[in-house]
Length: 77
Image (cartoon, rainbow, N blue to C red; front, side, top):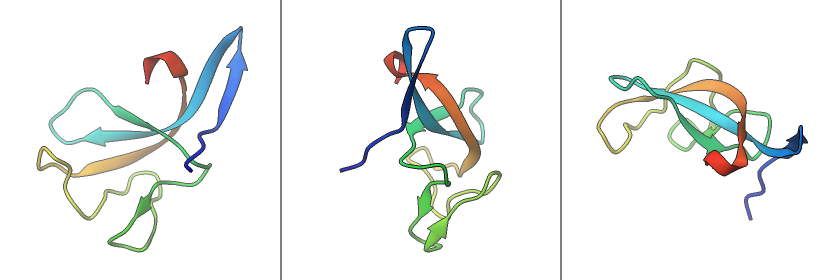
């Protein structure tokens, strides 16, 4: 089971997330992180580093770029 990392700040629960940018979109997307290393790219058989893109395109046909770790309110995911 994929457990995400959480913390409580000022009474609000936050979740550690991987942040992704997608070419042609102004808003970043977020996925709960399973650890402090980048997401696993199955095609490359390794974890991505900040600034790298997945080998495969996302559903919209654009490459997703890994932009690092951020804490997000759990209620916004």
